[in-house]
Structures are given as structure tokens and as C-alpha cells.
Amino acid sequence: MDDIQANEKCAQPDQDQSLDHDVGKITTIDDLEVENFYGSSTTQSYRLKSELVGKFMEEIGMGWFQWKLFVVTGFGWIVDNFASQGIGSVQPPIKQEFFDIVQVSYSSVAYYVGLILGASFWGLSSDLMGRKPAFNCTLLIAGVFLCAAAGSMNFIAFSALWAVIGTAAGGNVPVDSMIFLEFYLLTALSAWWNLSQLIVSLIAWVFLANFSCPTDTTPETCSRSQNMGWRYTLITLGGLALTFTFVRIFIFKLPETPRYLLSQGRDQEAVDAVNHVARQNGKPEPLTIAMLQEIDIRMGSPFHEEGETTRMTTKEIVKENMQAFRGEHYKALFATPTLGRQTIIIWAIWLTVGIAYPLFFAFLPSYLATKFTENSSLYLTYRNYCITSAVGIVGPLSAAVSVNTRLGRRWMMGISAVVTAVFLFAYVGVKSPAADLAFSCITSLLANFEYAIMYAFTPESFPAPHRGTGVGTAAALLRLGGLVASVISSQTGFTSAPIYASAALWVTVGVFCLGLPFETHGHDAL
Image 1 (cartoon, rainbow, N blue to C red):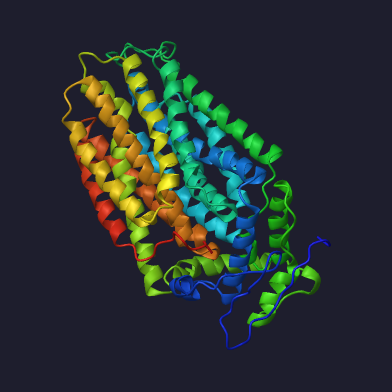
Image 2 (image 1 turned 90 degrees about the vertical axis):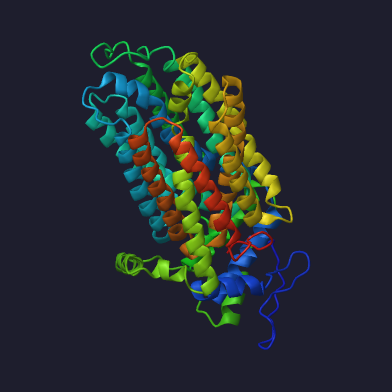
């Protein structure tokens, strides 16, 4: 880093607190709208450092490091959907084999209870312990217990294991979204989620269509040896998850995110993390500890000479955890009226989408299997499911372009939600298998378009010191919505009633989006 030279100059006390520069010098842009929005949720020193890091990350650009990160964070999205779509796919053959089932959807209830606990725990822990523990642990837990679920001998054991899987899957997407945002923003990240749906569809098509009991069998006539397809499916999904875990831990070495390190006062480690990305991308190291110390001097904040940082003692870690227990991170999300309103509406959107999305998509295989009973077969069911899943991948990819237009995040979310509702209402009335497939494909594309923007917009809206809490709570509410959807499904069965409810809820999401007070497009995430 000795060959990196940065010319720094201090702003006068009576001037705005921004650092100007030419090429190779410091710059941070003093965004008053951002400052007013976040208020006291972050310190002025942290905000300026975060802007500086954000600018250098932008100058480093999308390179080799980000593409590798795109893949390994995508693993989390894939495994999340392995679980969410996997349980819906294996429920029909489970119902045919096990005697002790009252409602097969109760296994989804157990799974969503685990998701709620996992999203809450891993989200909050990422603010307290960093992003890396959740990044590495969630995939491992999910992989082990997906394989274990394949050995279930009764419905109670099956449901209990899915609850454990849920605790891991609940942290995958929110944590991975935060990590990628704090290195580089790319809305198309959620395309991995849709790719996962396609993978599950293909695996189910191979195993469930060929190694399952006939659709009209009962536990009395369906033996374990005839019904191994769902076990093969779960072992395959679990094996893939464990492979992804190996790649994350032993091949790709993820540094802790710079903004988390800044929020913990670990400035030297933040400098090292940014410069690590630069080296990986073949760029000069842009950041020095002196640049961050200059901000501390101007803000009157303490710093350690020569880049020293202090590790938290066990007592300090316990104290920090107790502060979080008292709600310090939650209080920061309501530091200003605008931020508080943004937080409430975002959480309401996630809860509503959490009910609306699985009411259609999580039960789509079963719905497709029962809608056209005279022509249905397992082969046809999973063929259509694969086609629908493949088309859904287009949604996040198109969202990556659309969110950077003049409409921004809020309007694109609102418009796509309402249009999704229109096609869902129309979907129920189709009369032919071909039209059924066409409408399900269009609806899948639109809903995943909305999902992609929502997953990008939410972490952008929260400051990094409290981002895990905000995103984790949103994810927990999303899973709570899924729990509600499971209960609804268990009472209504695989009929058109949940689809009507899903359509109405998508309209509600559109209304909520119009009430969001802050557009993140055009502003750096803190």
C-alpha cells in the first residue's frame, strides 16, 4: 500500500462536510437527503466513511471478485428455494406413504416456524457477530438436515427435521443479500432463486415422476420401496447444498464486509477488505487508514495510531448483545419519522408478499396436478412446473435493468405487484391446459420481477450497522406470511381459493409500495 498516495484536505468548519478530490484523491459526497433520512441511526463519521468506501468500491467496479461473490452468494438463494420448493414437491408422495398424517400441510407449518426463528436469529446475529458466521453456517445446516429428512420413517420426524431446515434456510437470503450489497449492488442476484426452482423442478421430474406410487394409492397400498422418489429428491438437494458449503468455506475466502467492519470501529480491517477486492480485480489499492483517520479528526472521533484496532473482549461482546436485546438496533430503525415510516411499510410489504407468493407458487405442483384431472399425470405436472420455473428466471434479469430507469425501485415494485394480481385473477378462469401453462408462466415472471426488486430495495433502505436487524425482521415477517399461507392451504386444500386470495394481496402490495417515502435509486447505500 506504500505506492498508493492520497492527497487529503479538510473542509472548513463552516462548510459542508464533504471531501473533494481529483483522480486518486479522496471523495465523499455529502447527500443531505440521505443524512436527513437516516438521522441519528448512524454517526456522521460512519456515514462519511461509508460513502468513501462506497465510492472506492464503485471505482473498483464489477470484476473477478464480484463475479465469484455473485456465484457463492447465489448458493444461499438456491438452497433457500431448494427447501421452500422441495417441501411442496415431496408432500404429495409423503401423503401417500405415511399413516400418521392429519394434514400434510402441517409439515409446511413446522418448516415456516423454523424459517421465522432462523430469519430472526441470523439477521440479528449478523449485526452483532458479523456476516461471515451466518454465511458459512446456514448452508451447512440446511445440507445436513435435507439429507437427514430423506430418512424419515414417519410424518412427525419428517416435520421436525423440516423445522430445523427452516432455521438455516431462514437466514440464507437476507444475509447473502446484505453481503452482496455491501460489496456491490446487483438486482439480478435473485435470478439464482428462480434457477433453483428450475433445478428442483427438474429433479422432481426425474425422481418423483418415475419413482413414486401411482396418484390414486393410499398408505395401505403404497410401500416404501415403491415410493423412493421423494427420498432421492431430498438426498440430491442436500448433497448439492453440502457441495456449495465446501466451495464457500474451502475455496472462496470471503472477507468480512467493509461496512460492517466500519460500524464496529475496525477501520484497518475495513481498509484491508476494500483493498483485497481491488487486488482480486487487478486494480490498485485505493484506500488507506489515513483517509479514514482524517475523517475521524474532522469529526472529533477517537482513532488508533498507525491503524491499530481493538478487538472486543468477551465482556464487551456480552454488553453489545444485551444492548441489542434491549432493542438498540430496532430503535435505530426509527431514528427519524421518514426512516420509521419506510421501515414499517417495508415490513408490511414483506409480510403481505410472504402470504401472497406461496399461496400460488409453493403449491403450484399440487394445484397443476388436480386442476385438469382427466389429462393430468406426474410427467405432465412436473413438465409444466419446469417450464414455469424457467420462464420465471427472466423476471429478476429484467428487474436488474428496470430499477435503474426513471421509475426507480418504488414504482417498479408497485406496478409489477398490481399487474401480477391481474394475471392471477385471470389465471383461475382459464379452461385449457395450454392457457393454464401460459398464464402460470406470465405470473411467475411478474411475481419474480417484484421479488427481485424487493430483495434489492430492502437492504438498501437500512444503514449497515442495523441492516441485519432490519432485513432479518423483514425476512421473519416474510416467513410468518408463509406460515399463514400454509395454514390457509391446509384448510382449503389445493383449490382456486388461495389463488384468489393471493391476487388480492398482490394488489395490497402495490398500494403499500406507493406509500414508501424514500427512493433508494440514485443514493449510495450506507
